[in-house]
Length: 306
Image 1 (cartoon, rainbow, N blue to C red):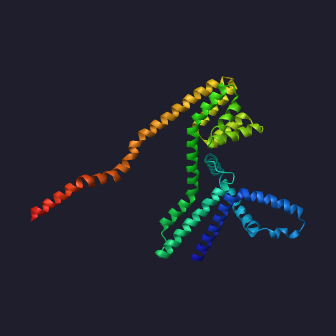
Image 2 (image 1 turned 120 degrees about the vertical axis):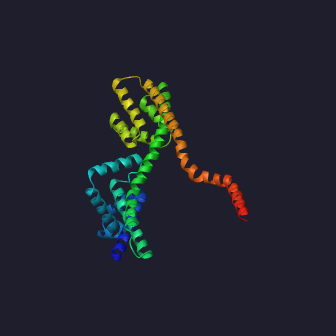
Image 3 (image 1 turned 180 degrees about the vertical axis):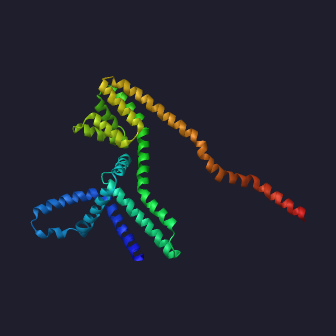
Protein backbone atom coordinates (compact mmCIF):
# COMPACT_ATOMS: atom_id res chain seq x y z
CA UNK A 1 0.00 0.00 0.00
CA UNK A 2 2.81 2.41 0.89
CA UNK A 3 4.60 1.54 -2.35
CA UNK A 4 1.47 2.36 -4.32
CA UNK A 5 1.14 5.71 -2.54
CA UNK A 6 4.77 6.53 -3.31
CA UNK A 7 4.25 5.66 -6.95
CA UNK A 8 1.11 7.82 -7.22
CA UNK A 9 2.83 10.78 -5.56
CA UNK A 10 5.83 10.45 -7.89
CA UNK A 11 3.61 10.11 -10.95
CA UNK A 12 1.50 13.10 -9.94
CA UNK A 13 4.55 15.26 -9.27
CA UNK A 14 5.98 14.32 -12.66
CA UNK A 15 2.72 15.17 -14.41
CA UNK A 16 2.53 18.45 -12.49
CA UNK A 17 6.02 19.43 -13.65
CA UNK A 18 5.09 18.55 -17.22
CA UNK A 19 1.91 20.64 -16.96
CA UNK A 20 3.81 23.69 -15.74
CA UNK A 21 6.34 23.16 -18.51
CA UNK A 22 3.55 22.93 -21.07
CA UNK A 23 1.89 26.16 -19.92
CA UNK A 24 5.03 28.27 -19.49
CA UNK A 25 7.13 27.18 -22.44
CA UNK A 26 4.45 26.17 -24.96
CA UNK A 27 4.85 29.20 -27.23
CA UNK A 28 8.63 28.90 -27.34
CA UNK A 29 8.34 25.18 -27.88
CA UNK A 30 5.85 25.63 -30.73
CA UNK A 31 8.31 27.85 -32.57
CA UNK A 32 11.07 25.34 -31.97
CA UNK A 33 8.91 22.47 -33.16
CA UNK A 34 8.09 24.30 -36.38
CA UNK A 35 11.76 24.94 -37.03
CA UNK A 36 12.54 21.31 -36.26
CA UNK A 37 9.78 20.21 -38.62
CA UNK A 38 11.30 22.25 -41.43
CA UNK A 39 14.70 20.73 -40.72
CA UNK A 40 13.26 17.22 -40.66
CA UNK A 41 11.53 17.75 -44.01
CA UNK A 42 14.86 18.62 -45.58
CA UNK A 43 16.59 15.68 -43.91
CA UNK A 44 16.02 12.25 -45.46
CA UNK A 45 17.64 10.28 -42.69
CA UNK A 46 15.21 7.65 -41.27
CA UNK A 47 16.79 7.76 -37.83
CA UNK A 48 15.80 11.37 -37.14
CA UNK A 49 12.85 10.35 -34.97
CA UNK A 50 15.25 8.93 -32.40
CA UNK A 51 17.04 12.26 -32.18
CA UNK A 52 14.01 13.81 -30.47
CA UNK A 53 14.22 14.16 -26.68
CA UNK A 54 12.66 11.39 -24.61
CA UNK A 55 10.10 13.78 -23.15
CA UNK A 56 8.80 14.65 -26.64
CA UNK A 57 8.81 11.06 -27.95
CA UNK A 58 7.31 9.21 -24.97
CA UNK A 59 6.17 11.31 -22.03
CA UNK A 60 4.47 14.12 -23.94
CA UNK A 61 2.23 11.83 -26.08
CA UNK A 62 1.20 9.86 -22.98
CA UNK A 63 0.43 13.08 -21.12
CA UNK A 64 -1.66 14.44 -24.00
CA UNK A 65 -3.51 11.13 -24.28
CA UNK A 66 -4.39 11.23 -20.58
CA UNK A 67 -5.63 14.81 -20.92
CA UNK A 68 -7.85 13.84 -23.86
CA UNK A 69 -9.28 10.91 -21.92
CA UNK A 70 -10.13 13.16 -18.97
CA UNK A 71 -11.71 15.73 -21.27
CA UNK A 72 -13.82 13.11 -23.05
CA UNK A 73 -15.06 11.69 -19.74
CA UNK A 74 -16.18 15.08 -18.36
CA UNK A 75 -19.83 16.15 -18.85
CA UNK A 76 -20.56 18.83 -21.40
CA UNK A 77 -22.11 21.21 -18.85
CA UNK A 78 -18.93 21.18 -16.76
CA UNK A 79 -16.84 21.85 -19.86
CA UNK A 80 -18.99 24.87 -20.69
CA UNK A 81 -18.63 26.26 -17.16
CA UNK A 82 -14.87 25.76 -17.22
CA UNK A 83 -14.65 27.39 -20.65
CA UNK A 84 -16.54 30.44 -19.41
CA UNK A 85 -14.29 30.71 -16.34
CA UNK A 86 -11.19 30.52 -18.53
CA UNK A 87 -12.53 33.24 -20.84
CA UNK A 88 -13.52 35.64 -18.07
CA UNK A 89 -10.22 35.10 -16.23
CA UNK A 90 -8.24 36.20 -19.28
CA UNK A 91 -6.09 33.08 -19.28
CA UNK A 92 -3.98 32.50 -22.36
CA UNK A 93 -4.60 30.02 -25.12
CA UNK A 94 -2.40 27.50 -23.33
CA UNK A 95 -4.98 27.08 -20.55
CA UNK A 96 -7.70 24.70 -21.72
CA UNK A 97 -10.53 22.82 -20.04
CA UNK A 98 -8.58 19.56 -20.19
CA UNK A 99 -5.46 21.12 -18.67
CA UNK A 100 -7.51 22.60 -15.80
CA UNK A 101 -9.09 19.21 -15.07
CA UNK A 102 -5.69 17.53 -15.22
CA UNK A 103 -4.29 20.11 -12.80
CA UNK A 104 -7.18 19.47 -10.41
CA UNK A 105 -6.50 15.74 -10.37
CA UNK A 106 -2.75 16.14 -9.95
CA UNK A 107 -3.01 18.69 -7.14
CA UNK A 108 -5.53 16.50 -5.34
CA UNK A 109 -3.19 13.52 -5.53
CA UNK A 110 -0.16 15.58 -4.49
CA UNK A 111 -1.88 17.20 -1.49
CA UNK A 112 -3.57 13.96 -0.49
CA UNK A 113 -0.35 11.98 -0.81
CA UNK A 114 1.62 14.51 1.25
CA UNK A 115 -0.99 14.50 4.03
CA UNK A 116 -1.13 10.71 3.99
CA UNK A 117 2.64 10.36 4.27
CA UNK A 118 2.86 13.06 6.95
CA UNK A 119 0.27 11.41 9.20
CA UNK A 120 1.62 7.95 8.41
CA UNK A 121 5.13 8.69 9.59
CA UNK A 122 4.45 11.28 12.28
CA UNK A 123 1.48 9.63 14.00
CA UNK A 124 1.51 6.11 12.61
CA UNK A 125 -2.10 6.36 11.40
CA UNK A 126 -4.11 8.12 8.72
CA UNK A 127 -6.46 11.00 9.48
CA UNK A 128 -9.30 10.61 6.98
CA UNK A 129 -10.69 14.09 7.67
CA UNK A 130 -7.36 15.75 6.91
CA UNK A 131 -6.91 13.54 3.84
CA UNK A 132 -10.35 14.47 2.53
CA UNK A 133 -9.69 18.16 3.20
CA UNK A 134 -6.38 17.98 1.32
CA UNK A 135 -8.07 16.32 -1.65
CA UNK A 136 -10.76 19.01 -1.73
CA UNK A 137 -8.18 21.81 -1.49
CA UNK A 138 -6.19 20.35 -4.36
CA UNK A 139 -9.34 19.91 -6.44
CA UNK A 140 -10.80 23.38 -5.93
CA UNK A 141 -7.54 25.37 -5.89
CA UNK A 142 -7.34 25.77 -9.72
CA UNK A 143 -11.00 26.80 -9.82
CA UNK A 144 -10.46 29.35 -7.07
CA UNK A 145 -7.46 30.74 -8.96
CA UNK A 146 -9.56 31.16 -12.11
CA UNK A 147 -12.39 32.72 -10.11
CA UNK A 148 -10.06 35.20 -8.37
CA UNK A 149 -8.52 36.21 -11.70
CA UNK A 150 -12.00 36.64 -13.19
CA UNK A 151 -13.14 38.89 -10.34
CA UNK A 152 -10.02 41.08 -10.57
CA UNK A 153 -10.28 41.33 -14.33
CA UNK A 154 -13.98 42.19 -14.28
CA UNK A 155 -13.38 44.88 -11.66
CA UNK A 156 -10.68 46.47 -13.84
CA UNK A 157 -13.02 46.44 -16.84
CA UNK A 158 -15.86 47.88 -14.77
CA UNK A 159 -13.69 50.75 -13.51
CA UNK A 160 -12.24 51.69 -16.90
CA UNK A 161 -15.55 51.52 -18.81
CA UNK A 162 -16.77 55.08 -17.92
CA UNK A 163 -13.45 56.55 -19.07
CA UNK A 164 -13.73 54.63 -22.33
CA UNK A 165 -17.24 55.96 -22.90
CA UNK A 166 -16.05 59.54 -22.32
CA UNK A 167 -13.31 59.10 -24.92
CA UNK A 168 -15.78 57.53 -27.33
CA UNK A 169 -18.24 60.38 -26.91
CA UNK A 170 -15.58 63.04 -27.50
CA UNK A 171 -14.18 61.18 -30.53
CA UNK A 172 -17.59 60.67 -32.14
CA UNK A 173 -18.53 64.30 -31.53
CA UNK A 174 -15.27 65.28 -33.23
CA UNK A 175 -16.39 63.48 -36.39
CA UNK A 176 -14.85 60.01 -36.18
CA UNK A 177 -16.80 56.89 -37.01
CA UNK A 178 -17.69 54.53 -34.21
CA UNK A 179 -15.13 51.85 -35.13
CA UNK A 180 -12.33 54.38 -35.55
CA UNK A 181 -13.33 56.12 -32.32
CA UNK A 182 -13.33 52.76 -30.55
CA UNK A 183 -9.87 52.00 -31.90
CA UNK A 184 -8.44 55.40 -30.94
CA UNK A 185 -9.99 55.23 -27.48
CA UNK A 186 -8.59 51.75 -26.82
CA UNK A 187 -5.13 52.94 -27.87
CA UNK A 188 -5.28 55.68 -25.23
CA UNK A 189 -6.03 53.13 -22.52
CA UNK A 190 -4.41 50.02 -21.10
CA UNK A 191 -5.68 46.96 -19.33
CA UNK A 192 -8.03 44.09 -20.07
CA UNK A 193 -10.78 46.30 -21.57
CA UNK A 194 -8.40 47.74 -24.15
CA UNK A 195 -7.14 44.24 -24.99
CA UNK A 196 -10.66 42.89 -25.47
CA UNK A 197 -11.69 45.83 -27.66
CA UNK A 198 -8.63 45.39 -29.87
CA UNK A 199 -9.44 41.71 -30.17
CA UNK A 200 -13.03 42.53 -31.16
CA UNK A 201 -11.91 45.06 -33.77
CA UNK A 202 -9.49 42.51 -35.23
CA UNK A 203 -12.32 39.99 -35.51
CA UNK A 204 -14.49 42.56 -37.32
CA UNK A 205 -11.66 43.42 -39.72
CA UNK A 206 -11.26 39.72 -40.53
CA UNK A 207 -14.87 39.42 -41.63
CA UNK A 208 -16.79 38.50 -38.51
CA UNK A 209 -20.19 40.16 -38.10
CA UNK A 210 -20.29 43.25 -35.92
CA UNK A 211 -23.12 42.03 -33.74
CA UNK A 212 -21.52 38.61 -33.34
CA UNK A 213 -18.16 40.16 -32.47
CA UNK A 214 -19.71 42.45 -29.85
CA UNK A 215 -21.68 39.55 -28.37
CA UNK A 216 -18.42 37.63 -28.12
CA UNK A 217 -16.87 40.58 -26.29
CA UNK A 218 -19.74 40.51 -23.80
CA UNK A 219 -19.44 36.76 -23.21
CA UNK A 220 -15.64 36.91 -22.75
CA UNK A 221 -15.81 39.59 -20.08
CA UNK A 222 -19.01 38.76 -18.21
CA UNK A 223 -19.45 42.36 -17.02
CA UNK A 224 -23.06 43.53 -16.78
CA UNK A 225 -22.23 47.19 -17.46
CA UNK A 226 -20.34 46.30 -20.62
CA UNK A 227 -23.15 44.00 -21.69
CA UNK A 228 -25.65 46.87 -21.30
CA UNK A 229 -23.42 49.15 -23.36
CA UNK A 230 -23.04 46.55 -26.13
CA UNK A 231 -26.80 45.99 -26.21
CA UNK A 232 -27.33 49.75 -26.55
CA UNK A 233 -24.80 49.94 -29.40
CA UNK A 234 -26.47 47.10 -31.29
CA UNK A 235 -29.93 48.60 -30.85
CA UNK A 236 -28.70 52.03 -31.95
CA UNK A 237 -27.21 50.59 -35.13
CA UNK A 238 -30.35 48.60 -35.88
CA UNK A 239 -32.66 51.59 -35.34
CA UNK A 240 -30.36 54.14 -36.97
CA UNK A 241 -30.38 56.46 -33.96
CA UNK A 242 -27.79 59.09 -33.10
CA UNK A 243 -24.88 57.19 -31.58
CA UNK A 244 -23.41 60.31 -29.94
CA UNK A 245 -26.51 60.78 -27.79
CA UNK A 246 -26.41 57.11 -26.86
CA UNK A 247 -22.76 57.41 -25.80
CA UNK A 248 -23.52 60.50 -23.70
CA UNK A 249 -26.39 58.75 -21.93
CA UNK A 250 -24.36 55.58 -21.38
CA UNK A 251 -21.42 57.57 -20.01
CA UNK A 252 -23.63 59.35 -17.49
CA UNK A 253 -25.29 56.07 -16.53
CA UNK A 254 -21.96 54.27 -16.03
CA UNK A 255 -20.58 57.04 -13.84
CA UNK A 256 -23.74 57.04 -11.77
CA UNK A 257 -23.43 53.27 -11.30
CA UNK A 258 -19.80 53.61 -10.28
CA UNK A 259 -20.75 56.28 -7.75
CA UNK A 260 -23.50 54.06 -6.34
CA UNK A 261 -21.09 51.13 -5.98
CA UNK A 262 -18.63 53.38 -4.16
CA UNK A 263 -21.38 54.51 -1.78
CA UNK A 264 -22.38 50.90 -1.14
CA UNK A 265 -18.79 49.98 -0.30
CA UNK A 266 -18.50 52.97 2.01
CA UNK A 267 -21.69 51.90 3.80
CA UNK A 268 -20.24 48.42 4.37
CA UNK A 269 -17.03 49.70 5.97
CA UNK A 270 -18.40 50.01 9.56
CA UNK A 271 -19.61 46.41 9.47
CA UNK A 272 -16.26 45.18 8.16
CA UNK A 273 -14.39 47.16 10.83
CA UNK A 274 -16.42 45.57 13.62
CA UNK A 275 -14.37 42.35 13.71
CA UNK A 276 -10.90 43.96 14.03
CA UNK A 277 -12.26 46.47 16.54
CA UNK A 278 -13.67 43.78 18.82
CA UNK A 279 -10.79 41.31 18.65
CA UNK A 280 -7.75 43.58 18.24
CA UNK A 281 -8.34 47.19 19.28
CA UNK A 282 -10.77 46.84 22.20
CA UNK A 283 -8.58 44.37 24.16
CA UNK A 284 -5.61 46.72 23.83
CA UNK A 285 -7.72 49.67 24.98
CA UNK A 286 -9.00 47.67 27.93
CA UNK A 287 -5.46 46.79 28.96
CA UNK A 288 -4.31 50.41 28.72
CA UNK A 289 -7.36 51.94 30.43
CA UNK A 290 -8.33 49.30 32.97
CA UNK A 291 -4.87 47.87 33.59
CA UNK A 292 -3.66 50.49 36.12
CA UNK A 293 -7.03 50.51 37.87
CA UNK A 294 -7.00 46.73 38.15
CA UNK A 295 -3.48 46.83 39.62
CA UNK A 296 -4.53 49.42 42.22
CA UNK A 297 -7.62 47.41 43.18
CA UNK A 298 -5.52 44.26 43.51
CA UNK A 299 -2.98 46.06 45.73
CA UNK A 300 -5.78 47.47 47.93
CA UNK A 301 -7.25 44.00 48.43
CA UNK A 302 -3.82 42.70 49.43
CA UNK A 303 -3.35 45.53 51.94
CA UNK A 304 -6.81 44.89 53.45
CA UNK A 305 -6.05 41.22 53.91
CA UNK A 306 -2.93 42.09 55.83
